Amino acid sequence: MNIQPERGAGTVLGLGLGAVVMAMLLGLLFLAQAGVMASRAASAADLAALAAADAARGLASGEPCAVAADVAEKHDTQLTSCTVAGGNVVEVATEVANPFRWGVATGRARAGPPP
Image (cartoon, rainbow, N blue to C red; front, side, top):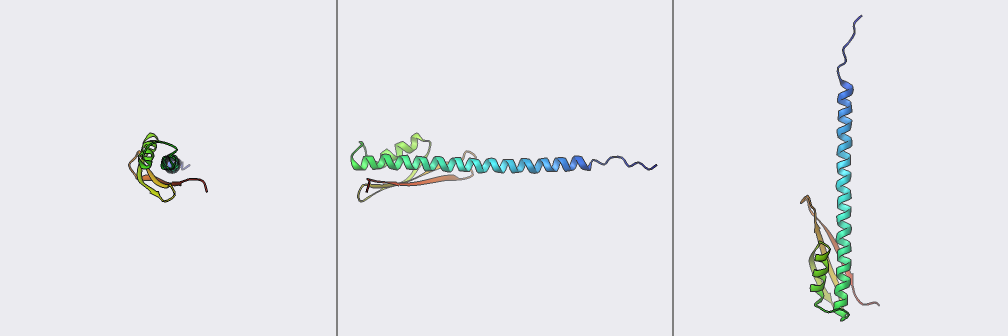
């Protein structure tokens, strides 16, 4: 009888499949992180725009863009632009830096008095 010793092909295949699954899970983790960051940036932009619009209308004290910057800072975001247009309409943009330093997530919002 000619008995062939086991060559370990199943072990190599198992390790390869395990590596592919781990790479896919890591990619999914990064996608989830990007989604959370985008949501944080958008929420901070919404809240900053609403607070700035209240300040522009005189419902709250302070200069609108300073109020927007303060609200954005309280939500761990950075205010990148703030403009007050006619009719007390405020447009703001915020960004959140990626903790892995791979980019930023941005959020934009516009708020003003009701129509």
